[in-house]
Image (cartoon, rainbow, N blue to C red; front, top):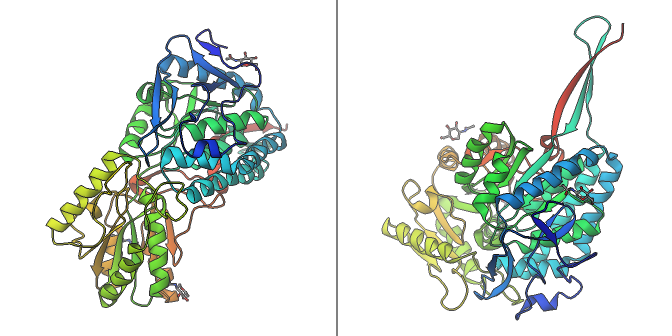
Length: 509
Ligand SMILES: *[C@@H]1O[C@H](CO)[C@@H](O)[C@H](O)[C@H]1NC(C)=O
Ligand SMILES: *[C@@H]1O[C@H](CO)[C@@H](O)[C@H](O)[C@H]1NC(C)=O
Ligand SMILES: *[C@@H]1O[C@H](CO)[C@@H](O)[C@H](O)[C@H]1NC(C)=O
């Protein structure tokens, strides 16, 4: 272990007691018993700094715990540990790597109540969604356990007589993983399970606003028998940790989920060391509703795709585009249903919608509503911040929104505001839907089979939901086109980017 780091808590130390979820649901039990990071299979503090960072509950503004404030030096120590571990992990048989990630996923499922409680508390999402995210996170363990054993190469007839070309897929090396606050666990496991199953090792920088789920994952990785140095978690000064990962030649790939702005910086920064990149960036998802759709079903589907996680997902509906002939009827249907959605604390069982992550989001929602109204839109439901403690914004529906000028259509919203826009013909609807530099998810509802194929092909997005927007799962390739990023997470397409192609020419004469 690096001289800089100091083990804490002794042998078998566990900073989280997942057997007692209730203690994390309210009150003042700190989420983590000791502010430490997980490097080389050990919980450590730094001899260089004992600074910590406070983490708050977005529902109450209460401080719920502190995390270690590591920087560049500690990150380099984590990279060194991951590099050493890579030399042995890459040689472990695929079926053993599979067993380790499968066990990791199983432990997440077993800890779903405790981990879901911690995750809900730090992110402000309602507990049903928090626990649901843990189950979703766990599914990547099982999925990539399967894929670990199905990484195939090729044998090609050689370029001249008496030769054979063999193509191997080898693990890429140490992966730097940088993850967002909106899904504090799932955005980690979908990449980490793939990387570890492929034989890579990982240094993770979780979001500073939601670090505890990541640290719970570290505890469970240890319990699952994932060897020391294979999965490391560093919390602290985001810019220093990020640049240490980007600048290090030993990091051979960066996997990032987050904003398009930061994604572009990482892309530029990675040029110097020619890293591979997996980038899952912002979206601006349209939801087209055609006049022949089943309107009540389309309304429910649209609302789920808009208000899940308070609108803070990269595939959240940003714009509802509704055909003129049904615009008024459909808008009323949606507005009536949204009116009934209750906003509340993570642990209020009647609440359907939790908090947003912080004050900037609340202010931004108020600003886009004001902008749309100034440009002629009407507020059908909501439109205001919820007074009192915590960061809450009313689920909002805006009608008659001018698509070409309103900010809420032009930029990614990442909050609970739904603009409803009118279109006349299919061609016009598709043109409006495609009119964005983002290309992550797009949705539409229609009962005409021919239109289903036509529109699915015409939309320029990496993921399309036709009559069903619940598209996320371990078995599907998640990712975007245009400025929404590079590569895919999940499915068989999610593991190959953690491997390099090696071609060997064998002479047989
Ligand atoms: C990590 O821990 C292992 C033992 O678990 C040790 O052999 C190795 O030297 C450590 N690596 C670093 C870089 O500290
Ligand atoms: C989706 O398509 C099917 C088959 O055409 C149709 O029965 C169903 O009503 C459509 N769903 C919606 C939401 O329009
Ligand atoms: C999507 O719309 C854009 C903008 O109108 C258009 O350029 C593009 O051709 C459309 N895509 C398809 C495949 O029709």
